[in-house]
Image (cartoon, rainbow over all chains, first blue to last red; front, side, top):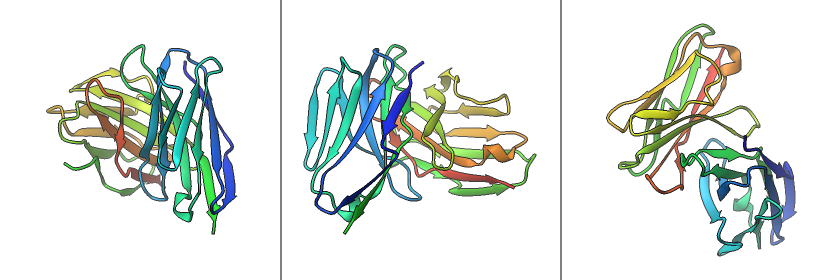
Length: 114
Length: 113
């Protein structure tokens, strides 16, 4: 079945610096890749997603890139702010069954130091 | 409703007791998912509903776990004879048919003592 690996598990950056989180997936049939941000005591919040027919997508300070050949995708956060501190999860969706079931990475704890 | 609502937000139960966790999805969303998040871990898929049927139950860890959905809306996840390893945050998500964006509730933190 699908497997998603996420790195690093923890990331500490200075405010204003960029942060990059990387994920790899195993099932070439996957074609939807969302990123979620989870703050302490809350449920995951969708922050950006990308579909396999697109190589890059941006939304203000957040961008996601996808390399289908290598089966990896990355989240880029520029000009980080303390409120970006949270746990970030990548996920991949197996579209063969069209259920929308998501397979998640293990998460990255991002700390932005003021 | 405006978002996915889960209740209770916290549940402490004794080992061996049964528990029921409730999820109220976004109005009109026909797809509903349950996930489990153990401490410091990623989200583990449990079950998927489309309407009232569950075409994918592959993530349920044992026969002590079951779920149902009625009226194409509210879903209940039941854990029978709870064990300490069942302690986790149980998250519910919903999405529109034909779309993949899933929106999560705040979760139920289950502690088995």
